[in-house]
Length: 149
Image 1 (cartoon, rainbow, N blue to C red):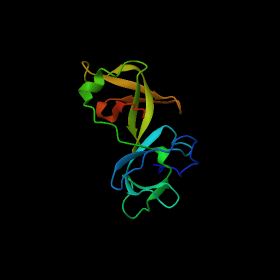
Image 2 (cartoon, one colour):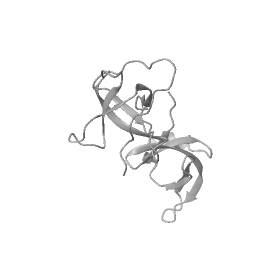
Image 3 (cartoon, rainbow, N blue to C red):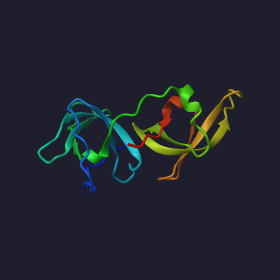
Image 4 (tube, helix red, strand yellow):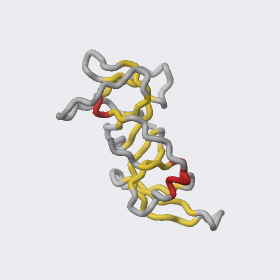
């Protein structure tokens, strides 16, 4: 699966607050094919001499160099949500995030589909509007509410 993309130019506006070394963060994917995705990482240097933040992605081992990103691509990890709590958020049209290919991707609930092996259960059908990619999700732990910071 592709690695998170390179940093892009910083948008105008107020500078984000400083990020402490050792902090857990998520980094927004910006490269083609990664827009709308978030990847877990740890801060290893902040700020760098260029005013960026150096992060090491969770999906990479220590042999892969850390990457410098602009602070506006960072957000704190969202709080954990139990699958039972997610059930009430999984209504048609609800914005969620789907764990897919080592990252979290923005999706919207399209509907439900019956589980042919367990008639009392249903799968959730979601779509990534950015890529028109449709997924059927049976494991609700692969979903979480979409968070805006």
